[in-house]
Length: 585
Picture 1 (cartoon, one colour):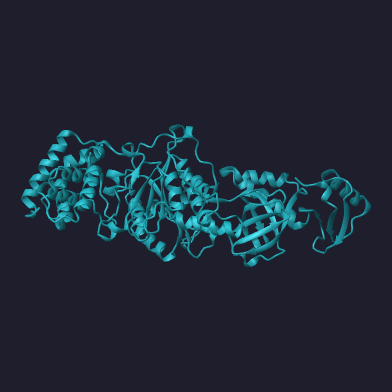
Picture 2: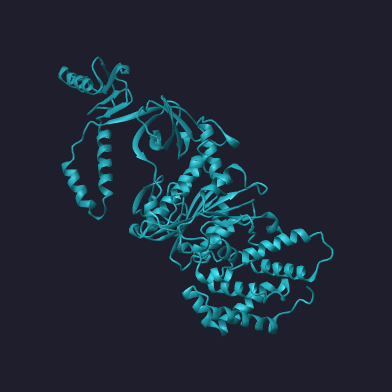
Protein backbone atom coordinates (compact mmCIF):
# COMPACT_ATOMS: atom_id res chain seq x y z
CA UNK A 1 0.00 0.00 0.00
CA UNK A 2 1.23 3.52 -0.84
CA UNK A 3 2.35 5.77 1.98
CA UNK A 4 0.36 8.96 1.34
CA UNK A 5 2.84 11.13 3.26
CA UNK A 6 5.56 10.33 0.76
CA UNK A 7 3.60 11.74 -2.18
CA UNK A 8 4.60 15.43 -2.46
CA UNK A 9 3.35 16.45 -5.89
CA UNK A 10 1.16 15.50 -8.82
CA UNK A 11 2.11 16.46 -12.39
CA UNK A 12 -0.52 17.34 -14.99
CA UNK A 13 0.48 17.33 -18.68
CA UNK A 14 -1.74 19.04 -21.25
CA UNK A 15 -1.42 21.39 -24.25
CA UNK A 16 -3.52 24.12 -22.59
CA UNK A 17 -3.33 25.20 -18.96
CA UNK A 18 -6.52 24.21 -17.08
CA UNK A 19 -8.71 27.02 -15.73
CA UNK A 20 -9.40 27.51 -12.02
CA UNK A 21 -12.52 25.31 -12.05
CA UNK A 22 -10.67 22.45 -13.74
CA UNK A 23 -7.73 22.83 -11.35
CA UNK A 24 -10.08 22.60 -8.37
CA UNK A 25 -11.59 19.37 -9.74
CA UNK A 26 -8.10 17.87 -10.13
CA UNK A 27 -7.10 18.92 -6.58
CA UNK A 28 -10.32 17.50 -5.09
CA UNK A 29 -9.75 14.18 -6.92
CA UNK A 30 -6.13 13.96 -5.73
CA UNK A 31 -7.00 14.88 -2.14
CA UNK A 32 -9.79 12.29 -1.99
CA UNK A 33 -7.61 9.45 -3.27
CA UNK A 34 -4.10 10.32 -2.08
CA UNK A 35 -4.63 12.76 0.78
CA UNK A 36 -4.32 16.56 1.22
CA UNK A 37 -1.23 18.76 0.95
CA UNK A 38 -0.20 17.41 -2.46
CA UNK A 39 0.95 20.14 -4.84
CA UNK A 40 -0.51 20.09 -8.37
CA UNK A 41 2.04 21.09 -11.01
CA UNK A 42 1.02 21.81 -14.61
CA UNK A 43 3.44 21.20 -17.46
CA UNK A 44 2.71 22.12 -21.04
CA UNK A 45 2.93 19.18 -23.46
CA UNK A 46 1.72 19.30 -27.05
CA UNK A 47 1.12 15.53 -27.13
CA UNK A 48 -2.23 16.01 -25.44
CA UNK A 49 -4.24 18.49 -27.57
CA UNK A 50 -7.58 16.95 -26.59
CA UNK A 51 -6.87 15.44 -23.22
CA UNK A 52 -4.39 15.24 -20.38
CA UNK A 53 -2.02 12.95 -18.52
CA UNK A 54 -1.94 13.03 -14.72
CA UNK A 55 0.94 11.36 -12.87
CA UNK A 56 0.72 10.78 -9.12
CA UNK A 57 3.80 8.83 -8.07
CA UNK A 58 3.59 5.55 -10.04
CA UNK A 59 -0.09 5.98 -11.00
CA UNK A 60 -0.81 7.42 -14.44
CA UNK A 61 -4.23 8.67 -15.61
CA UNK A 62 -4.10 8.85 -19.39
CA UNK A 63 -6.99 10.89 -20.80
CA UNK A 64 -5.43 11.34 -24.22
CA UNK A 65 -6.91 10.02 -27.46
CA UNK A 66 -4.48 7.12 -27.34
CA UNK A 67 -5.39 6.31 -23.75
CA UNK A 68 -9.11 6.24 -24.44
CA UNK A 69 -8.57 4.15 -27.57
CA UNK A 70 -6.56 1.67 -25.49
CA UNK A 71 -9.50 1.38 -23.09
CA UNK A 72 -11.85 0.65 -25.99
CA UNK A 73 -9.44 -1.96 -27.42
CA UNK A 74 -9.22 -3.72 -24.04
CA UNK A 75 -12.99 -3.70 -23.66
CA UNK A 76 -13.44 -5.29 -27.11
CA UNK A 77 -10.79 -7.90 -26.31
CA UNK A 78 -12.65 -8.86 -23.13
CA UNK A 79 -15.94 -9.07 -25.04
CA UNK A 80 -14.41 -11.32 -27.70
CA UNK A 81 -13.48 -13.94 -25.11
CA UNK A 82 -17.11 -14.87 -24.44
CA UNK A 83 -17.52 -17.34 -27.36
CA UNK A 84 -20.18 -17.48 -30.08
CA UNK A 85 -22.28 -14.57 -28.77
CA UNK A 86 -19.34 -12.15 -28.76
CA UNK A 87 -20.44 -10.06 -31.80
CA UNK A 88 -23.80 -8.87 -30.34
CA UNK A 89 -22.09 -8.32 -27.00
CA UNK A 90 -19.35 -6.22 -28.60
CA UNK A 91 -21.94 -4.10 -30.44
CA UNK A 92 -23.84 -3.47 -27.22
CA UNK A 93 -20.64 -2.59 -25.36
CA UNK A 94 -19.62 -0.10 -28.05
CA UNK A 95 -23.02 1.62 -27.90
CA UNK A 96 -22.92 1.89 -24.10
CA UNK A 97 -19.20 2.49 -23.63
CA UNK A 98 -18.12 5.58 -21.70
CA UNK A 99 -14.39 6.23 -21.26
CA UNK A 100 -13.08 6.64 -17.71
CA UNK A 101 -9.97 8.19 -16.23
CA UNK A 102 -8.43 4.91 -15.05
CA UNK A 103 -5.13 4.73 -13.24
CA UNK A 104 -2.26 2.75 -14.76
CA UNK A 105 0.70 1.97 -12.57
CA UNK A 106 3.87 2.89 -14.47
CA UNK A 107 7.41 2.09 -13.39
CA UNK A 108 10.92 2.75 -14.64
CA UNK A 109 13.60 0.30 -15.77
CA UNK A 110 16.65 0.58 -13.52
CA UNK A 111 18.92 -2.03 -15.12
CA UNK A 112 18.56 -4.49 -17.99
CA UNK A 113 20.72 -7.28 -19.42
CA UNK A 114 20.91 -11.05 -20.03
CA UNK A 115 17.12 -11.28 -20.30
CA UNK A 116 16.60 -9.74 -16.86
CA UNK A 117 15.24 -6.27 -16.05
CA UNK A 118 15.14 -4.57 -12.66
CA UNK A 119 12.16 -2.21 -12.34
CA UNK A 120 11.43 0.51 -9.79
CA UNK A 121 8.24 2.39 -8.98
CA UNK A 122 5.68 -0.46 -8.99
CA UNK A 123 4.66 -0.73 -5.31
CA UNK A 124 1.59 -2.89 -5.99
CA UNK A 125 3.18 -5.36 -8.42
CA UNK A 126 2.71 -9.06 -7.64
CA UNK A 127 4.84 -12.16 -8.18
CA UNK A 128 4.23 -13.76 -11.57
CA UNK A 129 2.52 -10.67 -13.02
CA UNK A 130 3.12 -9.72 -16.66
CA UNK A 131 4.62 -6.29 -17.37
CA UNK A 132 4.68 -4.45 -20.70
CA UNK A 133 7.85 -2.51 -21.53
CA UNK A 134 8.46 0.16 -24.16
CA UNK A 135 8.26 -1.35 -27.63
CA UNK A 136 5.79 -4.04 -26.51
CA UNK A 137 8.40 -6.27 -24.85
CA UNK A 138 6.77 -8.59 -22.30
CA UNK A 139 8.22 -9.69 -18.99
CA UNK A 140 7.19 -11.58 -15.88
CA UNK A 141 7.99 -10.60 -12.29
CA UNK A 142 10.11 -13.23 -10.53
CA UNK A 143 11.61 -11.27 -7.65
CA UNK A 144 10.18 -8.62 -5.31
CA UNK A 145 11.90 -6.37 -2.79
CA UNK A 146 10.63 -3.31 -0.93
CA UNK A 147 11.77 -0.95 -3.68
CA UNK A 148 12.41 -3.07 -6.82
CA UNK A 149 10.94 -5.86 -8.93
CA UNK A 150 13.13 -8.36 -10.81
CA UNK A 151 11.60 -9.34 -14.13
CA UNK A 152 12.45 -12.00 -16.73
CA UNK A 153 11.94 -10.94 -20.35
CA UNK A 154 10.28 -13.01 -23.09
CA UNK A 155 11.46 -10.83 -25.99
CA UNK A 156 14.68 -9.18 -27.10
CA UNK A 157 15.97 -6.88 -24.35
CA UNK A 158 17.74 -4.72 -26.94
CA UNK A 159 14.62 -2.53 -27.18
CA UNK A 160 14.82 -1.67 -23.47
CA UNK A 161 17.29 0.61 -21.74
CA UNK A 162 17.70 2.15 -18.33
CA UNK A 163 14.95 4.72 -17.85
CA UNK A 164 12.42 2.99 -20.13
CA UNK A 165 8.83 2.97 -18.96
CA UNK A 166 7.05 -0.21 -17.90
CA UNK A 167 3.34 -0.73 -17.24
CA UNK A 168 1.55 -3.28 -15.05
CA UNK A 169 -1.11 -5.45 -16.69
CA UNK A 170 -2.58 -7.11 -13.60
CA UNK A 171 -2.50 -10.44 -15.50
CA UNK A 172 -0.44 -13.61 -15.10
CA UNK A 173 1.50 -15.30 -17.88
CA UNK A 174 -0.60 -17.57 -20.08
CA UNK A 175 -0.67 -19.50 -23.33
CA UNK A 176 -3.37 -20.08 -25.97
CA UNK A 177 -4.71 -23.65 -26.08
CA UNK A 178 -7.01 -25.62 -28.35
CA UNK A 179 -7.45 -28.46 -30.82
CA UNK A 180 -5.63 -26.44 -33.47
CA UNK A 181 -2.30 -27.11 -31.76
CA UNK A 182 -2.37 -30.80 -32.74
CA UNK A 183 0.30 -31.53 -35.32
CA UNK A 184 2.06 -28.20 -34.77
CA UNK A 185 5.41 -27.01 -33.44
CA UNK A 186 5.27 -23.95 -31.17
CA UNK A 187 7.56 -21.99 -28.87
CA UNK A 188 7.16 -21.38 -25.13
CA UNK A 189 4.55 -18.66 -25.72
CA UNK A 190 2.40 -20.81 -28.02
CA UNK A 191 3.58 -19.02 -31.18
CA UNK A 192 3.92 -21.42 -34.15
CA UNK A 193 7.47 -21.89 -35.44
CA UNK A 194 6.75 -24.48 -38.14
CA UNK A 195 5.80 -21.96 -40.87
CA UNK A 196 2.30 -23.45 -41.22
CA UNK A 197 0.33 -20.31 -40.36
CA UNK A 198 -1.48 -19.07 -37.29
CA UNK A 199 -3.14 -21.43 -34.84
CA UNK A 200 -6.77 -20.73 -33.85
CA UNK A 201 -7.01 -20.77 -30.05
CA UNK A 202 -10.05 -22.07 -28.19
CA UNK A 203 -9.08 -20.71 -24.77
CA UNK A 204 -6.28 -18.97 -22.91
CA UNK A 205 -4.76 -20.85 -19.95
CA UNK A 206 -2.30 -19.48 -17.37
CA UNK A 207 1.00 -21.34 -17.49
CA UNK A 208 0.98 -21.73 -13.70
CA UNK A 209 -2.10 -23.57 -12.41
CA UNK A 210 -2.79 -25.37 -9.12
CA UNK A 211 -2.44 -29.15 -9.26
CA UNK A 212 -5.69 -31.17 -9.04
CA UNK A 213 -6.79 -31.77 -5.47
CA UNK A 214 -6.58 -35.25 -3.95
CA UNK A 215 -10.37 -35.61 -3.99
CA UNK A 216 -10.41 -34.78 -7.72
CA UNK A 217 -8.07 -37.69 -8.56
CA UNK A 218 -8.56 -41.40 -8.89
CA UNK A 219 -6.02 -44.22 -8.51
CA UNK A 220 -3.68 -44.96 -11.40
CA UNK A 221 -4.99 -48.27 -12.71
CA UNK A 222 -5.15 -48.04 -16.51
CA UNK A 223 -1.95 -48.99 -18.38
CA UNK A 224 -0.24 -46.62 -20.80
CA UNK A 225 1.56 -49.09 -23.03
CA UNK A 226 4.99 -48.06 -24.26
CA UNK A 227 5.48 -50.98 -26.63
CA UNK A 228 8.86 -51.59 -24.97
CA UNK A 229 8.84 -55.04 -23.40
CA UNK A 230 11.47 -54.30 -20.74
CA UNK A 231 9.27 -51.46 -19.42
CA UNK A 232 5.75 -52.83 -19.91
CA UNK A 233 6.67 -56.13 -18.24
CA UNK A 234 8.72 -54.92 -15.24
CA UNK A 235 8.15 -51.16 -14.77
CA UNK A 236 4.62 -50.54 -16.07
CA UNK A 237 3.42 -46.98 -16.59
CA UNK A 238 -0.19 -46.10 -15.79
CA UNK A 239 -2.24 -43.21 -17.12
CA UNK A 240 -1.77 -40.31 -14.72
CA UNK A 241 1.60 -41.58 -13.46
CA UNK A 242 4.91 -39.67 -13.40
CA UNK A 243 7.75 -41.99 -14.40
CA UNK A 244 11.27 -40.56 -14.52
CA UNK A 245 13.67 -41.58 -17.29
CA UNK A 246 17.18 -41.08 -15.97
CA UNK A 247 20.68 -41.87 -17.19
CA UNK A 248 23.89 -40.48 -18.62
CA UNK A 249 24.12 -38.61 -21.88
CA UNK A 250 23.61 -40.72 -25.02
CA UNK A 251 22.11 -43.76 -23.32
CA UNK A 252 18.75 -43.75 -25.13
CA UNK A 253 16.58 -41.64 -22.79
CA UNK A 254 14.87 -39.65 -25.54
CA UNK A 255 14.50 -42.81 -27.65
CA UNK A 256 12.30 -44.40 -24.97
CA UNK A 257 10.09 -41.30 -24.89
CA UNK A 258 9.86 -41.15 -28.69
CA UNK A 259 9.02 -44.87 -28.98
CA UNK A 260 6.30 -44.39 -26.37
CA UNK A 261 4.81 -41.54 -28.42
CA UNK A 262 4.88 -43.68 -31.59
CA UNK A 263 3.16 -46.53 -29.75
CA UNK A 264 0.16 -44.31 -28.90
CA UNK A 265 -1.02 -44.31 -32.51
CA UNK A 266 -4.64 -45.40 -32.61
CA UNK A 267 -4.94 -45.46 -28.80
CA UNK A 268 -6.69 -42.05 -28.39
CA UNK A 269 -3.78 -40.54 -26.47
CA UNK A 270 -2.65 -36.98 -27.21
CA UNK A 271 1.13 -36.58 -26.92
CA UNK A 272 3.06 -33.42 -26.05
CA UNK A 273 6.83 -33.31 -26.44
CA UNK A 274 8.48 -30.41 -24.58
CA UNK A 275 12.03 -29.82 -25.77
CA UNK A 276 14.13 -27.76 -23.35
CA UNK A 277 17.59 -26.63 -24.40
CA UNK A 278 17.84 -29.12 -27.30
CA UNK A 279 19.36 -28.33 -30.68
CA UNK A 280 16.78 -27.17 -33.21
CA UNK A 281 18.23 -29.58 -35.81
CA UNK A 282 17.59 -32.55 -33.49
CA UNK A 283 13.99 -31.49 -32.89
CA UNK A 284 13.44 -30.94 -36.62
CA UNK A 285 14.62 -34.51 -37.30
CA UNK A 286 12.34 -35.80 -34.55
CA UNK A 287 9.36 -33.96 -36.08
CA UNK A 288 10.15 -35.38 -39.54
CA UNK A 289 10.25 -38.91 -38.12
CA UNK A 290 6.87 -38.40 -36.43
CA UNK A 291 5.38 -37.04 -39.67
CA UNK A 292 6.69 -39.99 -41.69
CA UNK A 293 5.10 -42.44 -39.24
CA UNK A 294 1.81 -40.56 -38.96
CA UNK A 295 2.32 -39.63 -35.32
CA UNK A 296 2.17 -35.83 -35.65
CA UNK A 297 -1.60 -36.10 -36.07
CA UNK A 298 -1.93 -36.59 -32.31
CA UNK A 299 1.28 -34.85 -31.18
CA UNK A 300 2.20 -31.29 -30.18
CA UNK A 301 5.87 -30.24 -30.03
CA UNK A 302 6.81 -27.28 -27.81
CA UNK A 303 10.41 -26.26 -28.44
CA UNK A 304 12.63 -23.93 -26.39
CA UNK A 305 15.97 -24.30 -28.16
CA UNK A 306 19.46 -24.06 -26.72
CA UNK A 307 19.74 -20.63 -28.36
CA UNK A 308 16.60 -19.30 -26.64
CA UNK A 309 16.93 -17.20 -23.52
CA UNK A 310 16.85 -18.75 -20.06
CA UNK A 311 13.34 -17.28 -19.36
CA UNK A 312 11.93 -18.99 -22.46
CA UNK A 313 13.47 -22.33 -21.41
CA UNK A 314 12.18 -21.79 -17.88
CA UNK A 315 8.50 -21.38 -18.82
CA UNK A 316 8.51 -24.11 -21.53
CA UNK A 317 7.44 -27.12 -19.41
CA UNK A 318 4.74 -25.10 -17.62
CA UNK A 319 3.35 -23.91 -20.95
CA UNK A 320 3.34 -27.47 -22.33
CA UNK A 321 1.53 -28.70 -19.21
CA UNK A 322 -1.17 -26.04 -19.65
CA UNK A 323 -1.78 -27.26 -23.20
CA UNK A 324 -2.05 -30.80 -21.84
CA UNK A 325 -4.48 -29.71 -19.11
CA UNK A 326 -6.83 -28.32 -21.76
CA UNK A 327 -7.23 -31.81 -23.24
CA UNK A 328 -7.19 -33.57 -19.84
CA UNK A 329 -10.10 -31.46 -18.62
CA UNK A 330 -12.06 -32.55 -21.70
CA UNK A 331 -11.79 -36.14 -20.50
CA UNK A 332 -8.96 -37.11 -22.85
CA UNK A 333 -5.74 -38.97 -22.09
CA UNK A 334 -2.48 -37.04 -22.50
CA UNK A 335 1.16 -38.10 -22.50
CA UNK A 336 3.69 -35.31 -21.89
CA UNK A 337 7.47 -35.68 -22.18
CA UNK A 338 9.85 -33.15 -20.61
CA UNK A 339 13.20 -33.44 -22.39
CA UNK A 340 14.93 -32.61 -20.19
CA UNK A 341 14.48 -31.16 -16.70
CA UNK A 342 18.22 -30.97 -16.04
CA UNK A 343 18.50 -28.14 -18.57
CA UNK A 344 15.34 -26.62 -17.13
CA UNK A 345 16.94 -26.49 -13.66
CA UNK A 346 20.09 -24.95 -15.15
CA UNK A 347 18.00 -22.24 -16.87
CA UNK A 348 16.27 -21.48 -13.58
CA UNK A 349 19.61 -21.36 -11.78
CA UNK A 350 20.84 -18.80 -14.35
CA UNK A 351 17.75 -16.66 -13.82
CA UNK A 352 18.04 -16.86 -10.04
CA UNK A 353 21.70 -15.88 -9.98
CA UNK A 354 21.03 -12.95 -12.32
CA UNK A 355 18.20 -11.85 -10.03
CA UNK A 356 20.65 -11.82 -7.13
CA UNK A 357 19.24 -14.74 -5.17
CA UNK A 358 21.52 -16.62 -2.80
CA UNK A 359 23.01 -19.81 -4.28
CA UNK A 360 22.83 -23.07 -2.36
CA UNK A 361 23.86 -26.62 -3.12
CA UNK A 362 25.51 -26.83 -6.57
CA UNK A 363 24.63 -23.10 -6.89
CA UNK A 364 20.93 -23.89 -7.26
CA UNK A 365 18.49 -21.68 -5.33
CA UNK A 366 16.66 -23.12 -2.36
CA UNK A 367 13.30 -23.35 -4.16
CA UNK A 368 14.53 -25.57 -7.01
CA UNK A 369 12.63 -28.54 -5.53
CA UNK A 370 9.39 -26.55 -5.69
CA UNK A 371 10.27 -25.69 -9.29
CA UNK A 372 9.67 -29.29 -10.39
CA UNK A 373 7.19 -30.47 -7.74
CA UNK A 374 4.59 -27.88 -8.74
CA UNK A 375 5.12 -28.92 -12.37
CA UNK A 376 4.89 -32.70 -12.00
CA UNK A 377 2.02 -32.63 -9.48
CA UNK A 378 -0.20 -31.29 -12.25
CA UNK A 379 -0.12 -34.74 -13.91
CA UNK A 380 -2.99 -36.88 -12.65
CA UNK A 381 -5.82 -39.25 -13.47
CA UNK A 382 -8.93 -37.17 -12.80
CA UNK A 383 -11.98 -38.62 -11.12
CA UNK A 384 -15.03 -39.52 -13.19
CA UNK A 385 -16.83 -36.48 -11.74
CA UNK A 386 -14.11 -34.30 -13.28
CA UNK A 387 -14.30 -36.03 -16.66
CA UNK A 388 -11.91 -38.92 -16.10
CA UNK A 389 -9.13 -37.43 -18.21
CA UNK A 390 -5.48 -38.11 -17.45
CA UNK A 391 -2.05 -36.63 -18.03
CA UNK A 392 0.95 -38.96 -17.80
CA UNK A 393 4.38 -37.35 -17.38
CA UNK A 394 7.71 -38.75 -18.56
CA UNK A 395 10.35 -36.33 -17.24
CA UNK A 396 13.89 -36.93 -18.44
CA UNK A 397 16.95 -36.18 -16.31
CA UNK A 398 20.60 -36.45 -17.30
CA UNK A 399 23.15 -37.79 -14.83
CA UNK A 400 26.91 -37.40 -14.72
CA UNK A 401 28.81 -40.73 -14.66
CA UNK A 402 25.70 -42.52 -13.40
CA UNK A 403 25.47 -40.43 -10.22
CA UNK A 404 21.81 -40.66 -9.20
CA UNK A 405 22.62 -39.06 -5.83
CA UNK A 406 23.24 -35.60 -7.33
CA UNK A 407 20.98 -32.73 -6.33
CA UNK A 408 18.51 -32.52 -9.25
CA UNK A 409 18.20 -36.32 -9.81
CA UNK A 410 17.42 -36.97 -6.13
CA UNK A 411 14.89 -34.13 -6.09
CA UNK A 412 12.96 -35.48 -9.07
CA UNK A 413 13.23 -39.11 -7.95
CA UNK A 414 11.45 -38.10 -4.73
CA UNK A 415 8.69 -36.33 -6.70
CA UNK A 416 7.94 -39.01 -9.29
CA UNK A 417 6.21 -42.40 -9.02
CA UNK A 418 9.23 -44.39 -10.13
CA UNK A 419 12.23 -44.22 -12.42
CA UNK A 420 13.69 -46.05 -15.38
CA UNK A 421 17.46 -45.95 -14.99
CA UNK A 422 19.51 -46.40 -18.17
CA UNK A 423 23.04 -47.67 -17.60
CA UNK A 424 25.95 -46.70 -19.84
CA UNK A 425 27.71 -50.04 -19.39
CA UNK A 426 24.65 -51.95 -20.62
CA UNK A 427 24.16 -49.51 -23.50
CA UNK A 428 27.68 -49.92 -24.83
CA UNK A 429 27.43 -53.69 -24.37
CA UNK A 430 24.60 -53.69 -26.92
CA UNK A 431 21.67 -53.98 -24.49
CA UNK A 432 19.08 -51.59 -25.91
CA UNK A 433 17.10 -50.26 -24.10
CA UNK A 434 19.82 -50.26 -21.43
CA UNK A 435 17.44 -50.59 -18.46
CA UNK A 436 19.11 -51.32 -15.12
CA UNK A 437 16.69 -53.73 -13.45
CA UNK A 438 18.14 -53.14 -9.99
CA UNK A 439 17.82 -49.34 -9.87
CA UNK A 440 14.61 -49.01 -11.91
CA UNK A 441 11.22 -49.17 -10.23
CA UNK A 442 7.55 -48.35 -10.76
CA UNK A 443 5.73 -47.43 -7.58
CA UNK A 444 2.40 -48.11 -9.27
CA UNK A 445 3.49 -51.66 -10.16
CA UNK A 446 0.97 -54.27 -11.18
CA UNK A 447 -1.96 -51.85 -10.85
CA UNK A 448 -0.94 -50.47 -14.25
CA UNK A 449 -0.73 -53.89 -15.93
CA UNK A 450 -3.30 -56.10 -17.56
CA UNK A 451 -3.84 -59.53 -16.02
CA UNK A 452 -2.22 -61.13 -19.04
CA UNK A 453 0.97 -59.09 -18.72
CA UNK A 454 1.12 -59.56 -14.96
CA UNK A 455 0.76 -63.31 -15.37
CA UNK A 456 3.26 -63.57 -18.22
CA UNK A 457 5.94 -61.36 -16.61
CA UNK A 458 5.74 -63.39 -13.39
CA UNK A 459 9.27 -64.03 -12.13
CA UNK A 460 11.10 -62.01 -14.81
CA UNK A 461 12.62 -59.42 -12.45
CA UNK A 462 13.67 -62.11 -9.98
CA UNK A 463 15.30 -64.20 -12.70
CA UNK A 464 17.22 -61.19 -14.03
CA UNK A 465 18.36 -60.19 -10.54
CA UNK A 466 19.65 -63.74 -9.91
CA UNK A 467 21.42 -63.72 -13.26
CA UNK A 468 23.17 -60.39 -12.58
CA UNK A 469 24.27 -61.54 -9.14
CA UNK A 470 25.53 -64.89 -10.43
CA UNK A 471 27.35 -63.24 -13.33
CA UNK A 472 29.11 -60.90 -10.94
CA UNK A 473 30.32 -63.73 -8.71
CA UNK A 474 31.37 -66.06 -11.54
CA UNK A 475 33.15 -63.59 -13.82
CA UNK A 476 36.54 -64.63 -12.42
CA UNK A 477 35.75 -68.34 -12.06
CA UNK A 478 37.40 -70.75 -14.47
CA UNK A 479 35.43 -73.91 -13.70
CA UNK A 480 31.64 -73.76 -13.43
CA UNK A 481 29.25 -76.60 -12.69
CA UNK A 482 26.51 -77.49 -15.16
CA UNK A 483 23.71 -75.96 -13.08
CA UNK A 484 25.49 -72.60 -12.97
CA UNK A 485 26.13 -72.74 -16.71
CA UNK A 486 22.44 -73.40 -17.34
CA UNK A 487 21.43 -70.50 -15.11
CA UNK A 488 23.83 -68.14 -16.88
CA UNK A 489 22.62 -69.33 -20.30
CA UNK A 490 19.01 -68.74 -19.26
CA UNK A 491 19.88 -65.23 -18.04
CA UNK A 492 21.66 -64.40 -21.29
CA UNK A 493 18.59 -65.56 -23.21
CA UNK A 494 16.37 -63.26 -21.13
CA UNK A 495 18.66 -60.28 -21.76
CA UNK A 496 18.71 -60.90 -25.52
CA UNK A 497 14.92 -61.35 -25.67
CA UNK A 498 14.46 -57.93 -23.98
CA UNK A 499 16.51 -56.16 -26.65
CA UNK A 500 14.49 -53.96 -28.98
CA UNK A 501 15.61 -51.67 -31.77
CA UNK A 502 14.46 -48.05 -31.75
CA UNK A 503 11.02 -47.76 -33.32
CA UNK A 504 10.34 -51.49 -32.91
CA UNK A 505 7.10 -51.54 -30.94
CA UNK A 506 5.57 -54.74 -29.58
CA UNK A 507 1.84 -55.20 -29.04
CA UNK A 508 0.50 -56.68 -25.83
CA UNK A 509 -0.13 -60.17 -27.21
CA UNK A 510 3.39 -60.29 -28.70
CA UNK A 511 4.97 -59.42 -25.36
CA UNK A 512 2.81 -61.97 -23.52
CA UNK A 513 3.70 -64.77 -25.96
CA UNK A 514 7.43 -63.99 -25.85
CA UNK A 515 7.57 -63.73 -22.05
CA UNK A 516 5.52 -66.89 -21.52
CA UNK A 517 7.77 -68.85 -23.87
CA UNK A 518 11.11 -67.54 -22.59
CA UNK A 519 10.28 -67.90 -18.87
CA UNK A 520 9.26 -71.50 -19.56
CA UNK A 521 12.86 -71.90 -20.85
CA UNK A 522 11.69 -73.03 -24.28
CA UNK A 523 13.99 -70.50 -26.01
CA UNK A 524 17.13 -71.29 -23.99
CA UNK A 525 18.50 -73.76 -26.60
CA UNK A 526 18.42 -71.11 -29.36
CA UNK A 527 21.75 -69.50 -30.23
CA UNK A 528 22.00 -66.03 -28.69
CA UNK A 529 22.89 -64.35 -31.97
CA UNK A 530 19.80 -65.88 -33.59
CA UNK A 531 17.27 -65.05 -30.87
CA UNK A 532 16.02 -61.76 -32.31
CA UNK A 533 15.28 -63.19 -35.77
CA UNK A 534 13.93 -66.38 -34.25
CA UNK A 535 11.47 -64.52 -32.00
CA UNK A 536 10.19 -62.61 -35.04
CA UNK A 537 9.61 -65.86 -36.95
CA UNK A 538 7.89 -67.40 -33.93
CA UNK A 539 5.48 -64.45 -33.66
CA UNK A 540 4.70 -64.73 -37.38
CA UNK A 541 3.93 -68.40 -36.80
CA UNK A 542 1.49 -67.51 -34.00
CA UNK A 543 -0.20 -64.82 -36.08
CA UNK A 544 -0.68 -67.11 -39.08
CA UNK A 545 -1.56 -70.39 -37.40
CA UNK A 546 -2.85 -69.46 -33.93
CA UNK A 547 -4.55 -66.10 -34.43
CA UNK A 548 -7.29 -67.00 -31.94
CA UNK A 549 -4.80 -67.00 -29.04
CA UNK A 550 -3.39 -63.63 -30.15
CA UNK A 551 -6.87 -62.08 -30.43
CA UNK A 552 -8.00 -63.35 -27.02
CA UNK A 553 -4.95 -61.92 -25.25
CA UNK A 554 -5.13 -58.57 -27.06
CA UNK A 555 -8.86 -58.03 -26.61
CA UNK A 556 -9.46 -59.45 -23.12
CA UNK A 557 -6.10 -58.68 -21.49
CA UNK A 558 -6.25 -62.10 -19.83
CA UNK A 559 -3.93 -65.10 -20.17
CA UNK A 560 -5.90 -68.22 -19.33
CA UNK A 561 -4.16 -71.39 -18.07
CA UNK A 562 -5.17 -73.12 -21.30
CA UNK A 563 -3.64 -70.39 -23.46
CA UNK A 564 -0.46 -70.45 -21.37
CA UNK A 565 -0.10 -74.22 -21.86
CA UNK A 566 -0.80 -73.89 -25.59
CA UNK A 567 1.80 -71.11 -25.99
CA UNK A 568 4.49 -73.15 -24.25
CA UNK A 569 3.64 -76.26 -26.28
CA UNK A 570 3.55 -74.39 -29.61
CA UNK A 571 6.80 -72.54 -28.82
CA UNK A 572 8.59 -75.75 -27.80
CA UNK A 573 7.54 -77.48 -30.99
CA UNK A 574 8.55 -74.46 -33.09
CA UNK A 575 11.99 -74.36 -31.42
CA UNK A 576 12.62 -78.05 -32.03
CA UNK A 577 11.62 -77.76 -35.69
CA UNK A 578 13.19 -74.42 -36.65
CA UNK A 579 15.95 -73.39 -34.24
CA UNK A 580 19.66 -73.89 -34.68
CA UNK A 581 20.40 -75.34 -31.26
CA UNK A 582 23.36 -74.35 -29.10
CA UNK A 583 25.48 -77.48 -28.66
CA UNK A 584 27.41 -76.19 -25.67
CA UNK A 585 26.00 -74.73 -22.49
